[in-house]
Amino acid sequence: MAISYDVKLDTLGLFCPMPIIKTSKKIKELVVGQVLEVVSDDEGIKKDMPAWCETTGHEFVGLEEEPTGGAIHYKTYVRKTK
Amino acid sequence: MATTKLDPQVALAELQASKPERVTLVVLSGDMDRVMAAFIIATGAAAMGMQVTMFFTFWGLNAIRREGARGGAKDWLRRMFGYLNTGGADSLPLSRFHFWGLGTRMMKLVMKQNRMPGIAELREMALDLGVRFIACTTTLGLMGITKDTLIGEVDQFAGVSTYLAEARGAQVNLFI
Image 1: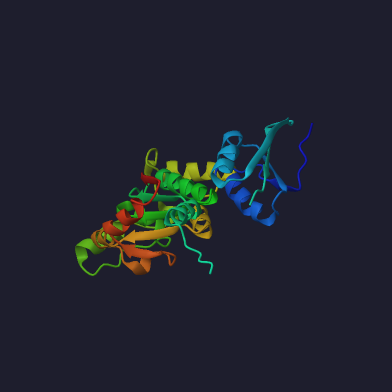
Image 2 (image 1 turned 60 degrees about the horizontal axis):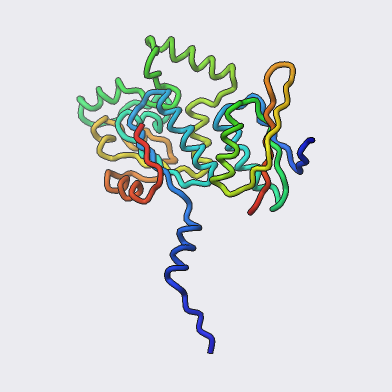
């Protein structure tokens, strides 16, 4: 079952630390309670996004892996908490 | 009469809770790969809500010099040294496989092909995220580097005490 989200952030083709930097900027545009979907093809995001959430205090909702023709698309979901 | 007396212990706890975690990085190396790692850590930490200070010394100063900058020292010895030591984010050599510039050029090409940000872009991003730059005054003099050849965004010109005052209150301190 797909996780529902309010705002989407595409970071495909970008490497560390770009997905995290873009996430930290994008989350400011959301209101508390909304969920952000971050799409990345960098496998590191699987560990990095929960770590970012733990440090910043936002809620890590989940991860989905979507196999495409080439690279796997990692979709991470973050709920803004403050 | 209602008196609102502040509990010092609670006030301290609140202050500690609101105070962001701090990171300091000493950037001594002027090697492209090492400086890149330093900026990646700095921007990553800033994106995680940490307060980051980068302290540039010795060869690391080249990373915050204007592109192609050469020393402007008065005496000939340091002027020569400054002349040989070209600065600028785009002029940093790889720590290994530099091969008189060829290896570094190839690395930059691969980075570009993969849309990876270069040193100049990472530095710009760091400043954008509020990372503070401190330049070491002693090594500036030693290396024959004058302040006017540095980028304008350098926050402070200072020495070891300033670094240690920052570092003793920080949770992460790295020497690169």
